[in-house]
Amino acid sequence: MTFHDRTDPECRPVLSAAAAQMLENPWPADPAGRRKIGDALLAAQTATAPEGVIWDDLRVPGLSGEPDVPVRLYRPASAPHPGPGVLFIHGGGMWAGSIAHEHVQAATLSAALGAVVVSVGYRLAPEAPYPAAVHDCFGTLVWMAGHAGDLGFDPSRLAVTGGSAGGGLALAVALLARDRGGPALRYVMAQYPMIDDRSETASALEFDDLGVVWDRRKNVEAWNWYLAGQAADLYAAPARASTAQLAGLPPTFLDVGELDPFRDEDIAFATRLMQAGVPTELHVYPGAFHGSEHMVPDAELSVRIHQTRLAALRRALRSSPPPAGVAADSAAPELAR
Image (tube, rainbow, N blue to C red):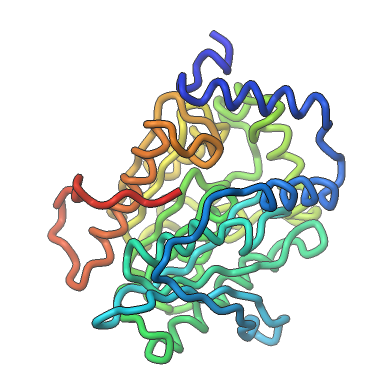
């Protein structure tokens, strides 16, 4: 079966249309040209942020004298008591994406969880290679935890979440927080995280050249821009962490599509987390490809993916930690798309 035939049936028409459009408008070779395409897609976006959330654009101090970091702060317009706090890290292969690109997702998360959400506009490669992005994200976490009272969230209910590159950065931030003695995280949610610069797994080799969606060729290129010739350590590429180096991380949620080049690296990472004694939840979705839940948000599969994530966050971030083994609330409201 072809890649197209293996995708979820509701995703196929959108995938075909996107492939046809890409033939008419070839993918630019440089990051700047590709970012322009992303900006055009953002301008055409019809989804809107939910009501009941206020947001402000700020700049927070960078880590150890590095440049200030742009962030967008989201807060519920009315909250009876301090809720959880979430550091939100956008995706984009380490070279693309922005606060604006994932504005709706971050605002929706704030509304759905009653949470203070801080979305971080980290520096992008190749202009700012590793460790710029990791430092910006970790520095924002440090700032966020240090200002929990002013921001209005409970510092004991602090989580980090992100997808793709953002998922990899979320895991890197968790590793840094553990190794630098804080801030303490209650939960990590890494959605199909980008974590292995080697791109040598069976799934990476299988999904090598997919055209319109993320594949191994794009991934190798992105890692080259991000690392800029540096050797990858566990903070750059968390998949390089040994089982022993994963011990002591917070409870972690990972998900990935069956047709994602990251499938095998993410499954292997989740397995090592469990072997290291980290409470771990892993979901692999048949028929899903990289980012399919955003590309085709109304598909039943996409709705289920969003609901599963939100239920996990609700369970993890409630005011008192749930007993081990308690299942997610299947009736939790859907995370808007």
